[in-house]
Structures are given as C-alpha cells and as structure tokens.
Image 1: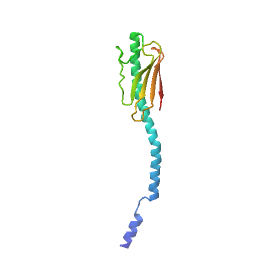
Image 2: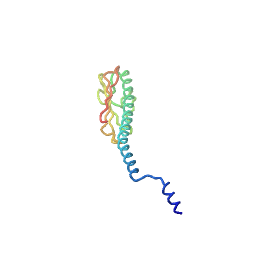
Image 3: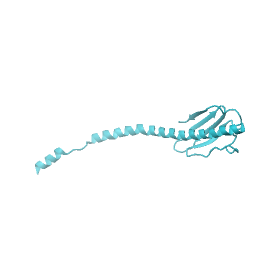
Image 4: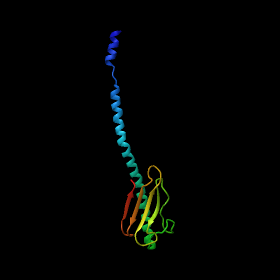
Length: 139
C-alpha cells in the first residue's frame, strides 16, 4: 500500500500557484491592450455608417441641384428625395449652402449612444461638379 501512494504522488501532475498567477497576469495584459483597440474599431465602423449615409444624401442633393439649379434648402423640399431620419448613432442635417448655388455642406452628429457623442462628420461639396470632402472629428 505504501508503494502505491508514493507512485501516485510521483506521477501527480498539476500547476503551481505561481504558474497560475503568471497566466492570469498575461491574460490581464492582453485584455488591457485588446479592449481599447476593439472599441476604436467599433467607433470607426459606426463612423463609416455615417459617411455612407452622408454620401447618399449628397448624391440626392446633386440630383436636386441638376433639376432646380440650386441646392436644397430643407430636407422636406419637393423633389429632394433623401433620408434624413436618425440612425442609431447619428442625426443628419444640412450644414451650409442650402438654397444657394455655391458650396453645400451636410453634417452628421453623433448621438449619446455607445460612445458616439462628440463625433461629428461633415461633407462639403464646392460645386455640383466637384467631389465631396469628408471631415471627421471626435474620434
């Protein structure tokens, strides 16, 4: 019987407390690095959603300009078919140049959801024939 106990103790395998603590520390360091990176990726993805919506609205505004020779003054103008409804993370508006023939600007402002408050996206078009310029702040 004594021989069996010695053999059992000799073959017993396991982790020491030090080894377990080293693993816990390594996992903590990895989590401390990964979580901020992940939240940054999520914020960028949500910002891409806002830029895409502004692009669609700008396309509709250019179509309006082609038809009426001026930029739309209000989202509810007849012939201006753009979706200004709020999404989960942004509210959309005409920023500048509405009703005129010069430059035209749109804005998407972050709502207070999932850390998007303070994020602002602007899209400005110098003329109907030029490309729009996008600016993002607050990321």
